[in-house]
Image (spheres, rainbow, N blue to C red):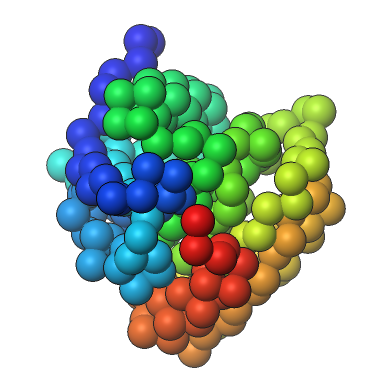
Length: 211
């Protein structure tokens, strides 16, 4: 397959050296879904919100799955490389620094962000993962970042889609490979809550001083 362009919304910051918030929606969402969160996290950031290129029964996603909670890992690899190719081209076109991108993803969007952390461990400046699942289990040589980027990892205590033990294993994997992970367990299911976004915004502001 050849890489395809992704539909997106880009809102530039007046500050050319600002960070870029990369917004990645959940299954069935689109590039508009997470835009209302951007100002809460960083009112001075460039904002890049992307729509996944995969459709599942008409619902946009960032990669295919074989069943609930079972990912097509070949497609995860391809779509992650496709997203990075898109980001690097767009960084030149829109004049933002690809080394100052912080991903914010929910559900399937958090999973493609997690795949970026695993396949391109030096790329992102940090990541906010709401209701993530480990996207790849097939990495033979592992991965490692030297940047020690911060990662916010938010789970729902009653989320029926993820085994709590799998969350713990995933956090350990990221930590072992150099990321500084902050985990939050909220009293919720798979849905995103105000506690998630409030605590994540506080975390963001403590980890990323104004550019």
